[in-house]
Amino acid sequence: MPKDAYDTGKHTPTFSAYLTIIVRDSKGRVVNIHRQRSHSPTANFIALLLPYNYYSQINGSKTITNIGGGTCSYQPQPNVSAYNIIYPNANASYTPPGYLVMIQVGTSSYSNTFSATSLAAPIANGTGTGQLIYGSVSVASNIAVSGSSAYFQISQAYANATSNAITITEVGIVVQVYTCSANKSSPTNCGQVLVWYDVLSSSISVPANGTLVIYYTFTVNP
Amino acid sequence: MITPDLVSEDDIAKLTIPDDQSLPADEPTFKAYVEAKVYDREGHLIQYHRQPMRSLTQYFLALMSIPIQGTSRSSSANQAPGILTNVLGLPSEVTNLAPYGSSIWGAANITWGWSIQLGSGTQAFSLSLTSLAAPIANGTGAGELVYSSPTVSTAGASIYVLISVSNGTPDTINVTEIGLIGTIYLIYYNSSDQATTNTYNFLLSYDTFSTAISIPPGGFATFQITLSFSG
Image (cartoon, rainbow over the protein chains, first blue to last red):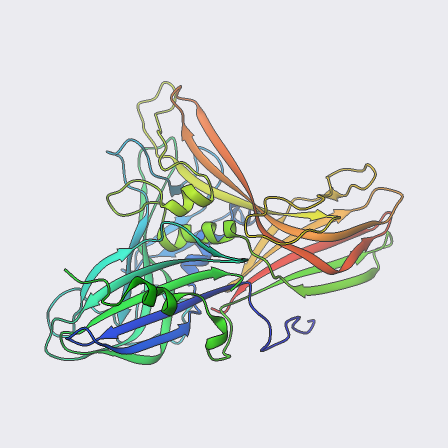
């Protein structure tokens, strides 16, 4: 194999992703700002990103595994019979297309982030012991451009309504995936799918009655 | 109701904008390479070149947004996110009808293909580049190369896109630029109940070679783009 063409430690990657976490106490004061590179698209993400010509060549499908352990086969093709990712339909009564469900947080970690299909120990939405209230997830509506660099961002806020601090060690992006063909009436519900997963470089403690905001930033030519 | 944030939007923006230099020098999220191998008419390897890919466009980022945030703004919106409409120029929604003579209604859907384009010019990079400076056409005429179908393969979190070209002309052809091409297919049945595929073409990356790749008469070459996430 040839040597790595990168000048290790000096090059600027053409794509990067960042995780920014801001923690506030019960009075709204910032008590922790955490930044790290985000590293880990999952196997589900790669399967969804691959172009149809990959699937043509292997003449087969990839398995998408959702956070509940359910699976579906994915084999996109540019024809009316293939089950591709659903696009928004003007006929509103029809099955909705896929959407960003949440940036999920958890209290454990997986060592093999690529093969993760769910968080190791997801924190539930609620006010019970060890739970966080999940706010609405914010979808990027556009790409921000600065010179030759561009990025988009998704974010979500959380509140700890319990009387104890909650420690977060893992974060992941969960997307609802549906596929359907243009000429068949039965869509495939692939469920809620983990497409990106990160173990935090240091754990984050959300104080009692404190809040948390997580930002994922995806950029080209940073 | 959770307050999204308690500092100003300016403060948030400063904290969350890309800033690679302020982070520890750990493994980057992503590496990408452009690789070329040139063979003479007898099949001998006569040139090998590998360099980092430098320049993904905004269209690559927009395409990536589909597996990250889906094709709808929310669970109830049933309209495409602004990235898809503003950057890729896709419609916010599509009216999909049943095939002619059928009462079965499917769903409009989306997929995409990738290929590689080679060129003999150079140009400054911009995020919104739509083509190479001087694309080399497919053929055996002067200055043309015969392109094979691209192959796409994967290993773990790496994706490889490869194309082979041959030079059927009597002259050496110099390749100085390369682009990853994406074609999006939007598939549905239109208002006349006819199967319809709208296509949208994009330049997903653009790079110039630090050394020209010279393909001799009767020779052939392979060009590979590697997209490797750290995983």
